[in-house]
Amino acid sequence: MNWTAFLRQLLYDPANPLIFNSSFFLGFFIVLMLFYPLVVSRIRVRTWYLLLFSLYFYYKTSGVFLLLLLLTAGINFVIGSWIAKANSKAAKKRLIWLSIAWNLGSLGWYKYTNFIIDTINQITGGSIPAMDIFLPVGISFFTFQTMSYTLDIYFGKLEPIRSFADFAFFVSFFPQLVAGPILRASQFIPQINARLSLDKERIAQALVLIFAGLIKKGVIADYISLNFVDRVFDNPALFSGVENLLAVYGYGLQIYCDFSGYSDIAIGLATLMGFHLPANFNSPYRATSITDFWRRWHISLSSWLRDYLYIPLGGNRKGKVRTYINLLLTMLLGGLWHGASWNFVFWGGIHGIALAIDKFFIGLKLFQRVSNQHVQNFLKLLGVLLTFNFVSFAWIFFRSQSFSSAWQMISLIFNQINAERFIIWISQYRIVAALIALGYLLHWLPKQYKVLCEKVLCKSPILVQSIILAIIIWVLFQFKSSEVQPFIYFQF
Image (cartoon, rainbow, N blue to C red; front, side):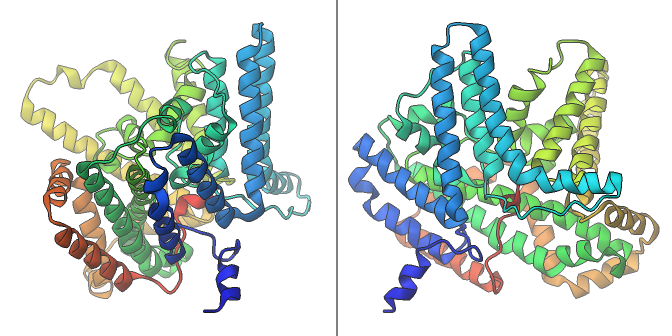
C-alpha cells in the first residue's frame, strides 16, 4: 500500500472537493458509522465525535476556509450571549446589527465583490480589475444559519446556547452543511443533548431517502445535464426551438433532482445517526400556484426569507401595495442570494411579480365561489400547468450565462417550433428522453407510493435490502460520468 498517496488523499484537494456522491465520502461515512454505536449513548462524547468529523468534512470541501466557518460560529455565539445579557433595547439593536454586519459582510466580500466591480465597470466604462477571491463552499447556507440564531435571540424566540461545542456542531453538522437544508437552532439544538434512538422503520425511511437521492442526482440529473441540457444552454443557437424548449424542461427536472437529491441524502444520513432534519422539498412541480410553489421548493430558504426578511419588512400588515413591494423586495434579494449575477436578480424579480399577482387574485377569492367539483379539479389542473410553465420559463434566466443567451433561447422557442423535430429529438436522445419522462412521472406520482416503498423495504429481509442496494449501486455505475459531478447548489 502506498501510504504517501493514502495520506495525500486525506488532505484537501481544490480540484476534488469532498461531496456525497464520491467514493471518498463513502469511506468517510463508513468509518464514522463503524465507531458511532460506541459513542451514541454518551451525549458529550457523541457531540465531540460528530463535531470533529463535521469539521474534517468541511476541511475536505473548502480547505483553509474551515477557519472562516469557525470564526463565523465564534462571533455569532458570543454576540448571541451578549444580546441575551444586554439590559436595553438600544444595546440589543447595536449587537444584532453587529451580527448582521459580520454575516452579510463576509458573505458579500466573498460572493459579491467581483459582481460589484463588474457592474461599476459596465456603468462607468471603467476597467477595475477583478479580485482573486475564492467562494467558500456553503457560505450562503452557514451564514444564514448563524444569522438566524442571533436574530431569534434578539426577537426573544430563543435562549442562547451555553456550550460553544454544541453551537459549533449545530453550524457544522456535515450532512446539511454545504447545501442545506438551512437549520434553525430551535430545530436542532434540542436534539444534540437528547437520547437518540433508531428503529427499523426509521432506518427504512433513511435508506429510501438516500437511495432516492442517489438516483435523482447520480442517474437523472447528471446524465441529462451532461448529455443534453448543458449542450443546449451553452450554445442555444446551435439547436432548434424544440430542442431549446426540451432543454428548459430538462433543466427544470435536473435542478430539482440535483438539489432535492442532495436534501434527500442529507436528511437520510442524519436520520441514520438519529437526528431529524426538516424536509426541504414537497413535490414543487405539483404546485397549483406560484405561492404554493414557494411553499414546496427549497422550503428552508423560503421560510427563512419569510421569517427574517418579508415579515420584518412589514409582511402583509401594511396594506396591499406595501405587501406587493415587500414580496418583490424579498424575492429580489432571494434571487441575489443564489448568485452574483443580474440574471439571478431578474429571476427573483419575476418570481416576486408573480407572487404579487397571485396575492392579488387570492384576495379576490374568485376560486372560493366555484362550487362544482369538476370545475374545481379543472382549475387546479390549469393552475398546475400554468405554474409549471411559468417556473420553467423563469429557469431560463437562472441557468443562462447571460441575458442575451436567455433571450436568444426564448426567441428560438417561440419562432422555431416544429413537431417533426420532436420525433427526431427522441430518436437522437432516447435515454435522455426516457429519463426526463421517468423523472417527471415519478415526481407527479401520489405521495402514498413513497410511503408504500418505505413499508415494503422496512418489512423486507436483509437479503432483499442488500440486493436492492446492489442494484442501485450497479445503476449508478452504469450512468456514472468520468468525473464526479458537483451538486448545483454548491456554487450558491
